[in-house]
Length: 81
Image (cartoon, rainbow, N blue to C red; front, side, top):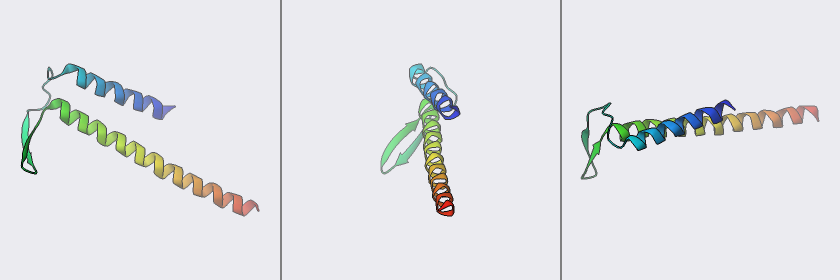
């Protein structure tokens, strides 16, 4: 239940960032050159990248947690047999 609540809060914060559409200036806009293209990073993009990294970390932790507990279950079944 906690994971769903956290993901819901992350989704709503992302939606809030997208709906402000340039009205909030938390960070100064920065221009970055990647592969010959200039990309402007503003507040919305930076916050969205932070949220994306958080979601990827939560997903990876969930997968690792699932694999660890799945293996522990198999070990317990072998011991019972």
